[in-house]
Image (cartoon, rainbow over all chains, first blue to last red; front, side, top):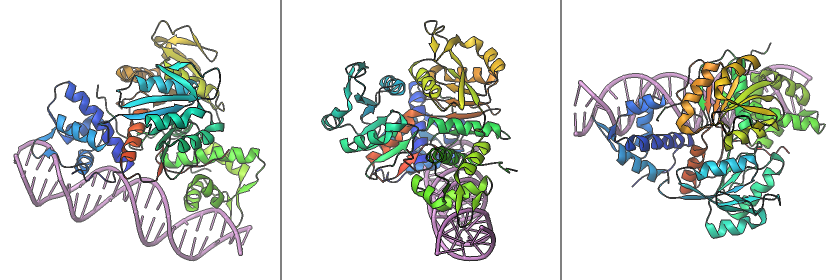
Length: 227
Length: 227
DNA sequence: AGATGTGAATGAGTTCACAGCT
DNA sequence: AGCTGTGAACTCATTCACATCT
């Protein structure tokens, strides 16, 4: 059905954004929405929206627009967000704990099933009802829980070894917050979120003539206030 | 000299990465480096590296390579990293505090000069030697400190209003961690870091045939272990 | 009419390939 | 010989413009 293969990362990012917006509209009782309306919300072109949505299967009705709930459902399915993704967090410093609570309070599509560190002072403490374990238990937990995603929030100096541990433990994707570019394992999907680079980018552009653009992470520049 | 105008965000991100690597090489006493060597470190093409570096002014020596310290210096200058950028953090929840300590421990080119919240329980506490203030003092602090960058780490529901407060206070750039796409003010540079979208992207791609690629935030896909 | 879907045109970014320096 | 700098080719993404459906 969904010939859903091969969406580009940028497209996926936008789709995930649309989806959140649709949930919101749906809650408000909005029934249908046009590409033009969505475009305004996100500061994107209507053509862009249509291209994106066409890629996951045409559910627009010409002359009318898109059905909000249908579209939301389809998006959810196409993005694999109809099911829960289990993840483990490695590194229980400030950032790791912050991410943990952030995700715990999230909409629940990403469930934290493990929290790890090596610091004896941290092990045994709890993060959102979860006991912090020693990293040596990582493989066991990943295996028994079926966790697919690892979140890396350790200091730069030990990022690579912990990354390797995640790979060895069997996760299929890693989101890395350590300010290092990891040497990625080709068998899994790896994504770096480098806060320092983000700041440096801002620093650069405000040094400059200050072009007015807004940039977003996944490398597209739209914006919306959907609340 | 530097006709440094108009580098694209992706290029800036790569340059900032190169710079960090060069610092490291420099510490190790490495004197010169070739585009090929850099390419290997970051899993990029040598041509890419040369194009990037050519844009900030040709300091390569044909047949030889680049002088590490010269290049580092030039990069630092071109990226505006020769000076300290002052920033304020709005939102002292888990994420805000985590970012605060993360940046405080950073190399010091970004200095936190203000930490804000609205929660009476948090106000008066300290974050890395800095007293947490009420958001109403934001404008005053930004003015007196000359802060240019605002970091937003508040809940989604109040992100827009706090963003507006930052703009009104006079910062020139905002890095937003709230999981909302802000309605950006054209006068300032705004950048969203959406952790949820990052996770959803990973979720999607591991649902798929699992193409092997690694992606990085600023939308380029290189990687390096430079430690 | 009004909005979608989509080929064609444009634009941005990356890689190729080679001329030009040391 | 070796490596940089750079125009040309190419790939990927976005925008245009319009045919198509309700």
